[in-house]
Length: 267
Image 1 (cartoon, rainbow, N blue to C red):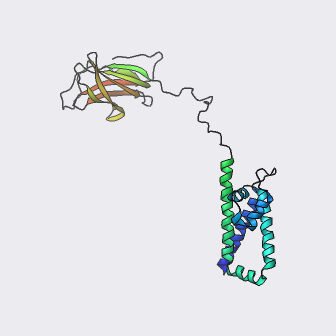
Image 2 (cartoon, rainbow, N blue to C red):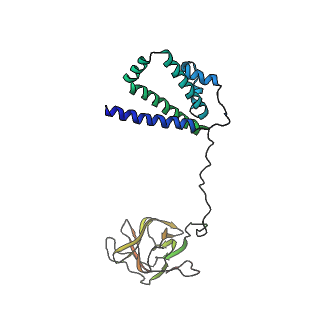
Image 3 (cartoon, one colour):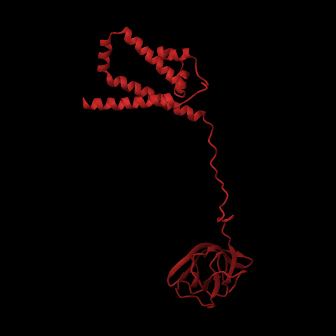
């Protein structure tokens, strides 16, 4: 019993909200597109003979919905006058949930149709601006600028294959700027083409590495790879070049901040 009363209370609150919303939520002071009063009356008194366009219009026009509500109240008064009061009361008490649920469903359907039609009739929203002007502190061109930088490793000699000892060769430390570089490495004479691993290491720790393809160009075996060293701290490192076949080259380098008017540098 308590559950039924609580349900009926919530149902009445929902009905009141739905009626209030449909009565005020869709103002149409100019009565644009409104059907004649006879069509609304036909929907209230003979719903089976009314067209669906009238029902759809009620869900988007508060004045017509209020008129429809008035006609429903008029119809209810007529039915109560012609039918036995005891019969009406007994049917309502026997089917209170059915009566309320039917009305709630009808009103919710009307609200849903109203939202759908409002969305269809509204003009398309303006496209979202995908291109915006950069702020005063933003760069006009945020693209990273890479600088050409060459290292000639042709004077380094290969270690014995399978040996982990460092190769013989120049011990001169080469200055390399900590900036974005397009690094071109010239390998020793007769170095095979193929895949090489290039890395920057110190104290057994790797700070940067990349895989690159060595190609033969004009009699020289060259590796060209992009190396963004902007996050590498200044200091001494070893630039190591290793192939899958066991070739291993080590060139000592010193990473330093870039100097003005820097250009290509060779050891």
